[in-house]
Amino acid sequence: MATSQINAVPSAHVEAAPVTVDRDIRTHMLATYASLRRLIAVATAAFLITLAGYRYVGHDPVHRDSISAYYYHHNGDVRMKDLFIAALSSVGLLLVAYQGYTDRENWALNTGGVALLGVVAFPMDWDLATDSSGELTIRGGVHYTCAVTFFLSLGYVCLYRAQDTLGLIPVQAQRTYRNLYRITGFFMWTVPAVALLLRWIGYDGWVYVVEYFGVSVFLIYWIVKSVEMRVSLTETPQGLAEAEARAQ
Image 1 (cartoon, one colour):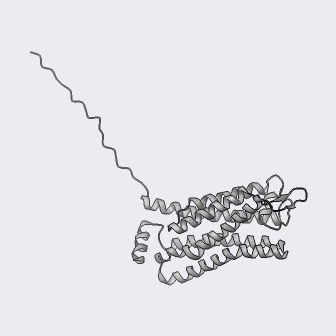
Image 2: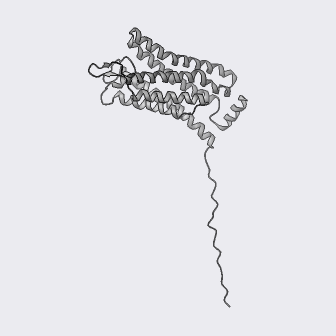
């Protein structure tokens, strides 16, 4: 009687090798938000530098009364309009993407980001025939409303929400950062009022200076915030644990 031999078939299930990652998910998330802060600062700095170049050393430098007026400034082959849209849209989207430390900060950042996108979507009124600002229309009204909303929203973040993370840093450093945030918030809130006052009394040429200063303060805030978050050691899991322990 012949005997049959059954060959064993190896199991199809093979245990996967463990995946090795360079860093854990918490470190990845913290690094992502650090990158977002840097991108906001870099995009803002690039906008300010380019704007100054168009005003003083460009192909056809022209002194406009406001930052928004450069939307209509044609300078050689590269129009300021294109850079205006690219820079402000980038910053607006980054503000919306950035998750605030608290819900209130997040709402304020979202409001400021959407308002900045509104500044781009609804440019100021302009008379192409005279190459000067035109009569105020609904579109122009939306533009100015969005600009004011942007400064007020970010001023609120500087004054009231930026301090929410100060409990995560050493006590001796808290006062310095608190004062810096108060100063930046004060100037962010002052810019719209001063700009409107200058328009009202007929000093339109100074509006550009005030607006440029306001955007520079916005840049300074994000630089300070980035430094503060690094000081708090929250950009590493170990540092976050230490910071949370100090805050308790």
